[in-house]
Length: 294
Image 1 (cartoon, one colour):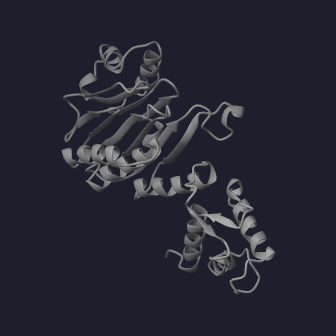
Image 2 (tube, one colour):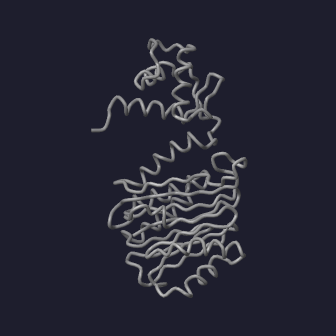
Image 3 (tube, helix red, strand yellow):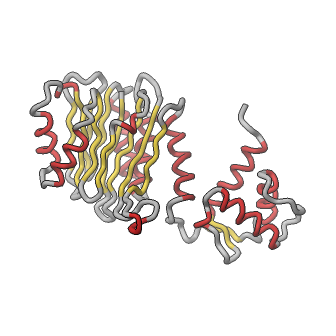
């Protein structure tokens, strides 16, 4: 009833899990991750004890296969279980019990595993693996690409309901080392008709709000897009001045007010430029306002 991917980026140390399922709030059950240790996905007839126990074993030095075998050795329902594990060193292992509902299976790659049950077919796992390996960027980008590919290939053959992604990075969370937070990305869609695409939409907002990883070349000159920004901010109720394409203090104030209200204050620039991510989000929000969904 679920497809997922667990993976590590050896260079950054990022560890993560992404999952989607025709099951309520799969993100509350399947993914377990600990910075510097490993990542676990427990699914099929999921045993939620597996996550913390396997992570504890990994922390003690067990390789993934040995850790999985240890928890399954005392499990009377082992053939109904499915589990994928990767440690911080990139060692990966997955298990699919013989009684998991078809199509069920897994693929083990370099520093990752993909696994699923009640799938549309083997093509779901193959698409996930290809997308993960082909996608450039950070681990979060690769995980989301894999999840999207699996969804597009048919995903859970019963339908769609929930999706989630967790990526940990030392001091990577909101507040960083000052707060001792390691959750670089932590998002869940618990009940939605199109959960994977909704998860991707939420990540775009998370990225603008929380992360600081913009491409330094992805900027626009505010003077060049002043008229568009004026129209967008007027549609959203932040700008009251004329639509004349002039970069005025009034426009700058309205823009910074919109960014602050939307929690994008860490993306405010004072050099006459606007991050491309923020600019595109602003224009898209104004278009939604002009053409609300029925």
